[in-house]
Amino acid sequence: MGVAGRVVPYPLNRRLLIPTSVGRGAAGAVATAMSCRASAVAAHHLAWCVARTTGSHLIPGKRQALDLPVAVRGVLDVVADVVGGLDAFALLSRRQDHRGAHLILAFRDGSPITFCKIAGESSAVSFGVEQRCLTELSNAKRAPVIVPRLLVGGTAHGLQFTAMSALPPRPHRPFWGNVAPILEWLQLSLADVLPRVGPAHWVPMHGDFAPWNLRRLWFGSHTLFDYEDARYGPPSGDAVFWMVATATLKGQPLSHAIDEESREFWREFLTHRLSSQTDPELDDRLLATLLGAPVRR
Image (cartoon, rainbow, N blue to C red; front, side):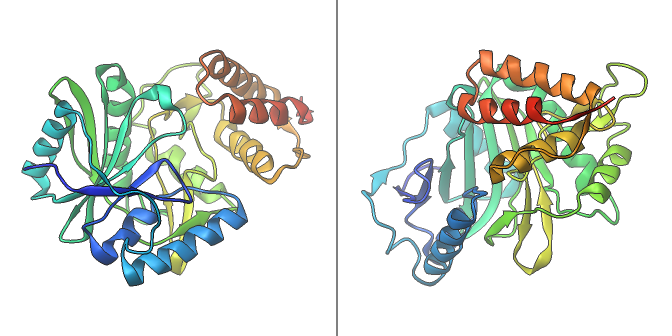
């Protein structure tokens, strides 16, 4: 498979490169853009409608050749051997540049086929965790959310990779509603998937359960993705992080009391992440919200 073609930067998210050869399928690439602010979500939805009608033709910006490292191209060849031919690629860069992962939405005949994560071998543990979660959750009956299905994963050309089914190519927005049923389902479904660590009363958790990972698609369905940080943690861990992330994104203080164990768990986590400069601006805001919340003792 030859990885070729041209891409154009998506003007509402400079971290996204859209293939110019997929026609109206460009809307599927636009749909991968994440945003939680209402104005940005509205702009993304409008851009999706334009791309669905005209493809990439009305997207401003300089067209450029697709540039992927040779090893990444080799991984995409391995993925294509499993899922079938791939002929166009959208590239999405993470906010956390140092994580070094290539996030690629691969197309065939204008339709999104698979979403691939490709990174160095240091990502083996987190990729392995996510692959086990995808396998278990995508096969679960009566799931309250859509979970991508693992297509193939492993090591190739010195890189770790996970290729999962592409989500419906529709725009989405953060979900702000009641998440208790989803959290209960996660705890039950992941009990035998994750290695048990920590105190005996800890439970399985998503580990990054926030509006940027729980999205509401058009027509009412919901999707939850990004399971690299799944682990055991305090019983209220995911719920507390959800409340902290939601309040932070809305620019509000957290008025609900949180338990001391969960606050200490996330304080240590965010402090460590700040020291590694993962996403300092966001982590600083999350930590301020967390430490300003009343504690239930």
